[in-house]
Each structure stands twice: as structure tokens, then as C-alpha cells.
Length: 233
Image (tube, rainbow, N blue to C red):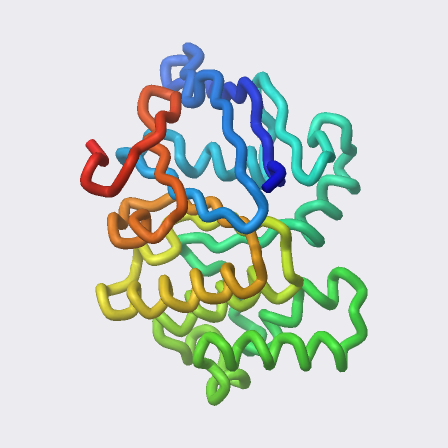
């Protein structure tokens, strides 16, 4: 399989509280193949979220380059990057970021409407995805009327509704209990495999990491491969 996502020499430096530079990522190299699931694990504050933001064109690296499907982010202007995010990327965050004034159905339709799909087609596709995550009877409910697990499953449906090439997930089950986490993981991986979507997930969850094709440990700004969850430091 060819590499869908490539990152080369990724560095990210922030200004620390004392005004001194704080290097969070120190020359990260990463490849993700089409349809592959990669888990990034590491201690809190290790830079997992920062790395996902760079891979998702939500922030720019201090140094290094990211390519998605052959397009180098550094060569793209703001409009082109927004188009990449809308068409080829899906995002699932620890906090679902659903629009509270809209129903579950409307939230999942949103990426398709933004991409210009007619409302009828967007509704049909969103209904299909919501049914696949077990929310067929909850489509008209707003986020406040859904449980935490239902909100995250809605967020997964929204991330996958436009058939992205890559989904970036940041602690997707971090706020859920064990039962809801397992259900979310089941839905997430089943749909990712079905759509042949590549996934990069940052997580503290060993069960979630254990389901990935590869596990990477992030520490001191660098990543190293881990053979199994039992080998996670």
C-alpha cells in the first residue's frame, strides 16, 4: 500500500510561560498507508494533540513538511487547506464539538452541505451513517438530549459521512465509561475498515491502541514504534 499521509522532520516550538522556546515535537517522521489504523500513545502533555493538529492542517509546523495524498500543506493557501480539511479529512475529538442548536441529523449533514452536496443527498447519507452507529431513533434529538456515548457516536458519523481519506481522532473515548468506550471503538473501527479510511488516533486507552495496526509511543518530542500494548512504557 502507498503512503497516504507523510510527515517529514516535523518540529513544533511554542513560547513557554517564561518566554523561552518550548519544543514539543522534535523532528517527527511518520507515514500512514491507505486504510491503516495507527495509534499514538504517550503521557499527558507529550504532544499528541499538537501532532494531530499539524497532520490535520489545523496548525502549521515550526519546521518540516506534511503531505496528504500527494499535496504538500506548505504549498497550499488557506482556501486550499480548508478544502483539504473538508474533503479528505475527518476529525473526532475528546469533546464532540457538535453544534448544540442543530439535531444529530443536521450535525452529520453539515460536512456534506459545506461541500456543496444537495440537501436530499446529504440527508440520505447522514441517515445511513447515524443508523450504522445505532442512532436511527435519535436523529431528531439535539446534543443536549443525547447521552455522552451517543454524542460521540454522532461525532464519529459526522467524521466519516463524507468518506474522508484520513480520520484524526484525539482521545475519542476519553470522557466515556468502559461500556460506552467499547461500543464507540466497535463502531469506529468497523466503519473505518468498511470505508477503507486511514485513521490516526491519539489515546490513553490500551484497549483502543491494541486494535490498531501499529502503535507509536510519543515521548520527548519523538516517536518510536511499539510492538504491542504490553510493550507500552
